[in-house]
Length: 402
Image 1 (cartoon, rainbow, N blue to C red):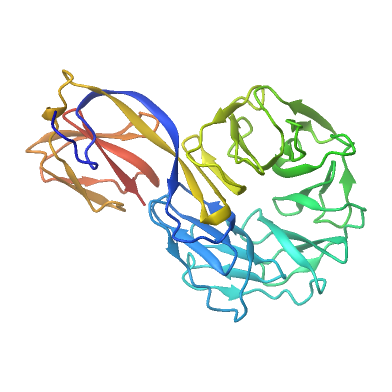
Image 2 (cartoon, rainbow, N blue to C red):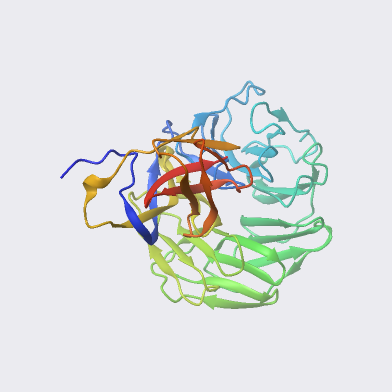
């Protein structure tokens, strides 16, 4: 049997299965990674200890080190948040916030002089390019601060409720915010000037983890107490429903979702990943290639997610094709070259012959381009960013649209 090159996908007549698999990516660092942010399937950032900031423009196939070059002292970056491909923020534990508007090429320190001195800050979320919140702790009291000018200035937000720790925060639009702390969820519709609280949704010896909210009526929050496998969903803010089917072990902390039905959670210690596509009616466990402490996850669509954690570990959730062979004969495969890859506006297809029918298929198996080409050039400028497969004479070759 002829050995196939890695870059070739074997001759197929149809796409018989598109499966999702977790793949360990090469971060190039060993520092613990604390945060990850993607705004589409190709452009993402990760951050962590020892001034670690990483960037990818091809979905994590390659990660490069980003130099912030604006602060002299070593920083422990705890969180990263991007609202579009160019605008994002980094949060360091001692209240340093850095901002970029050019996709990480340059970073500028935000004015955080009004923040409570001596605080340790660890969570951040922006609803849009202007409105964001950070949380932390100082002198055994929790801290909340907000910006409404994209981080140029920050103001302390009153949060006098006696809680031991804030484990999750979500900025929702211009004035609304939700916070998970101890066994309750708090919300404000006036930027934190006043707060309302839900009834306790866990027992008093349990602690909530992170939350994901689309609005006050559509939100999820995890339970990070070991042995408690409960995730809660809100239909209206004061009423929370438990979601347990298929969950095991408990200790869930991280959570992300791209709509009300599709949610992913992770165990804080074991790295177990569960997901639901029916709003928590049932959960399925994902199989990972490595076990490690997960610190953050990002779930942006049904075929794209990333988790980061200890030792510089990054895992990506990607699509893979299981093809059906023509006549069971692998040797019929012919090499097709695509360049550039990744591509922005067009791709050149080599070794395809003349006047060939070319199809471009997305990761859901849908044909998004179908046309005959005569000059080996295919215009892909109208495609959204992501992973695609060029199909010619039953052969599939993957490329990335930037």
